[in-house]
Figure (tube, helix red, strand yellow):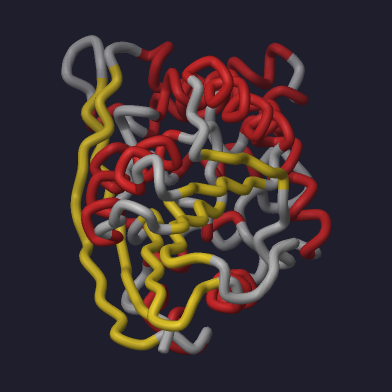
Amino acid sequence: MEANLQKRVQRYGWDKASLQYEIFWQQQLKPAQDLLLSMAAIQPGEQVLDIACGTGLVSFRAAQQAGKSGHVLGTDISDRMIETANQVRQDHGNVNTEFKRMDAEQLELDDELFDVVICALGLMYIPNPLLALQEMRRVMKPGGRIVAAVWGERAHCGWANIFEIVDRRVSSEVCPMFFQLGTGKLLESYLLKAGFVNVKSERITTTLSYNNREDACGAAFEGGPVALAYFKFPEHVKEEVRTEYVGSIAAYGNGVGFQVPGEFVVASACKV
């Protein structure tokens, strides 16, 4: 898919998903987010950049670690995600956080501002992840560190057929790069190519638990990466894709709900 088109798909797709994102994904993504924050080891007073921050699930936790003397800037390509994060910030009086809409491949930021850059499950959606990593390195201080999490290999993610199911009904792939960065050592390779050193990674397995068919489909279609395409489908096609998706995860059913396997890769590196 042409890069600018892919960015539009992501921007407006996550606008659509913003209201449902935390409902369906907050607990599902927590294992990856926990490991990412542990590896980042954010210290009081540090300046932190959270790329593809979404509604701020990781940003606010990072802000707690950075303390009142630190600061977290969250960026995302989705206007609605940023609006939601800013509303939460205002509601809770988080004075050490800030959220701005920004393209990860072209950060509107000066050089060498941040001690830590984090990106929790966002790199898969960026058309040129190497360029984005180079931009993250540019805005890091010398000695700064980066931690990025991505979904793992396709064969280890039981919900992966969602993309094929949707792609058969649209004119182009919804997420053409989704599982690539989690394959083998590719994420580590990208970090090295971007100029980082001391690259380390961990691969962890997880289980996505859904209480019923409605929750499984809500996460897959309404609160996730295929939301833009899904909401454009007529009602009969929506029901078709939901039925097909439930069939694809039937092997993980436990009577009423589902226990779907998943995998994350979390990698850290430093800037000399």
